[in-house]
Length: 265
Image (cartoon, rainbow, N blue to C red):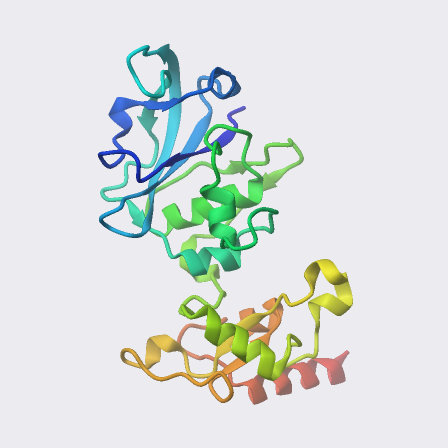
C-alpha cells in the first residue's frame, strides 16, 4: 500500500521543479523513510512569481546517491498526474481547508504545513491534507486513485472538485474577515451554532464568513463592508446557502428552511 508524502521546492532552487531530475534531501533518514511506490506531492515557490504552485503528484521509482549534489540523497520520480502546468495555490483559501497544526504563530496555517524547515519526506501525510491536495488536482481534470488513509482505518473519498467546495472561496482579505467576526461575533447568524461553545476552546473562533452577494457576481474589484456585506455562518449553513450554484440563498430564506424543518420534525 502506497503512502503519501510531501516535498517542498523552495526559492533557493535556481530553476522551477522538473521531476525528470528527481528529488533530493540532505539527510539519509528522510531518504530511507520513503519506499518505491510511495507518492509525493510537490509544491514550489519561485521568487519571481511570488506565489506557491502545486507541481503535481509523483510516484517514487527508486533511490540513488549523488555525492556532487547539494542534496545527495535522491529519488527518481514518475509523473502520476501529468498536469500541463503547475496549479497556482490560493494561500488564504487553503487556510480554510487544512486541518489545524501547531507552529510559528506569525505564519499562516498553509505555511505551517508546507514551508517549515526540513518538512520534505519527514513523515507520512495526514489523510485530510491528502484529500485537500487531491481536490486541487481533480479540479484541473486529472484522474487520481482513491485516497487510502495512512493509518489504515478506511477509505477517504471526495466528489469531483468544485461541486462540493462550499468554502468562502473568494475571501482574500484576512483583516476584513477578522473585522466581520469582531462585528458579528463567531456564532452562525442562521442557526446560532457556535463552534467554541460546542467543542470548547480548541474550536473557539472557528466560523465561515459568507458574502451576502457572491463575489463572483460583483463583476470585478468592489468595495466590501465587513458590517453589511459579510456574515458569519457555520460550515453546514454555508454549504446549504451555496448548494445550488445558480441560487444562493439569502439568510432569511435559510432561516425559513430551518424553521420549516423544525416544525416538520
